[in-house]
Image (cartoon, rainbow, N blue to C red; front, side):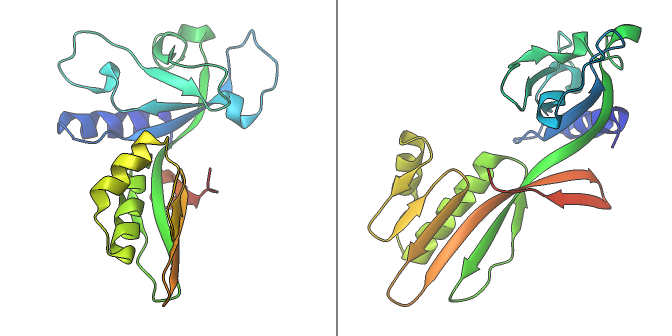
Length: 196
C-alpha cells in the first residue's frame, strides 16, 4: 500500500477513538536525492503507530514519530523528513507501507485452535498467556503479572513463556504457541513473518 492509503486508514481508525492503535511499517526507497547510498531493508524501514497527532482529529500539533527497525534511529519526527509530508522535494521517498498485525498460532497434541489475529504484540502475548492458563487450569492474572515483571520471560514446573513463544505440558498432552508477525500490504497481499 502507498503512504496515502496508509494515512487514510490510520486517520479513519483514530477518528473512531479506539482503545487500541494500529502499527505500520513505512519503507523508504531513498533518503532524498542527495543521498545515493544503498541501505538494507531494516535500515530503510520505520515502525509507526496510528497514535500520532498527524493521524488523530482535533490535536493541537502535527507529528509522526517512528523508529528504525535496525535500532539506529529511535523516535524520529518523520513528518519533517518525508517528501509526502513536510520534507519537500528533497525529502525521503516512501517505497511502500504495510499494516503490522500478529497471529497467535497453536500446535497441540490434544487439538488445534484457530489462529487469532490482533494488532499489537501485547494483545498477542496476553492471548498466549490466557491460553496457557486455560490449558493448565490456573488463574491467568498471576501469570500475567509475573510475565510483565520478568520482562516477558517466565518458567514454571510444566511451562515456559517467552516474548513470542510458549510451551506447556501435562501428563495427557502438550501445547505450544508462537506469535508470528503479519505484514498487510493490501487485502490480497498478506505475508506471515518469522517469530522475533
